[in-house]
Length: 267
Image (cartoon, rainbow, N blue to C red; front, side, top):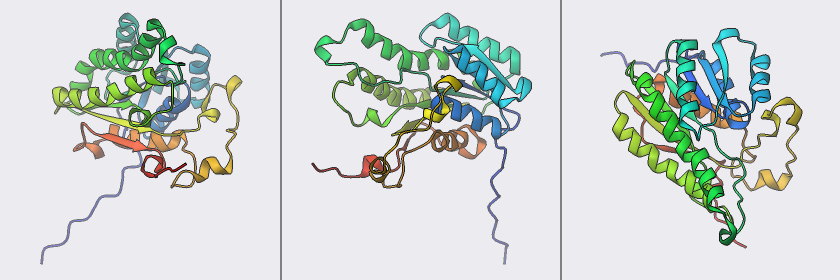
């Protein structure tokens, strides 16, 4: 009788020898993903508008040339092009791109008073930024035949609070952009999307803004998983999607929300 083939144990450093770019990577979920990628063996280039937060990351991580920081406005094409080129010069290759940058506050006030410039700022920060970073990194990602893009959307692409139209529209657009690019860029580059729910990022800010999250028992209790999420919850999935273990996964959305969007709510 032929032996049953075994399942290999997970690689503790599945991103060893790879380079990952993370936009909005100096604080919050982006920092969590960048830090997890470093722990998984990758070199990391983070792009962020906040120079103090970027410098703090490099000090805290203390990994030498494996981590670089670049000031970046993802809504402008020239800085995005420069970010990708600088990452290639510093690390020699690009294997993964995490499009995480965006405006954190979803509330913009009543639609009747929402100015076109503010509406466009949300689309630029979330959706146009993802387009530009993907556009300029795509050739490098495809060069080795196994690139991976992970877009960070939100459960707000599926459900909403009042006065959040710009944020919801931008995040919803990311879902469609994800599956469209997965078809265009495959098989050399896989494209997937993570939609986080309530993620407490207070402890993942720059040192001057860092604090312990103020969470109540009822905040945790409304999640079927029993707690509010953390950047580590999103980062663990991002590392998997960036790694060779996810070679057969593309064009998909993964919701990381502790089960909240599956829980029926009655008033």
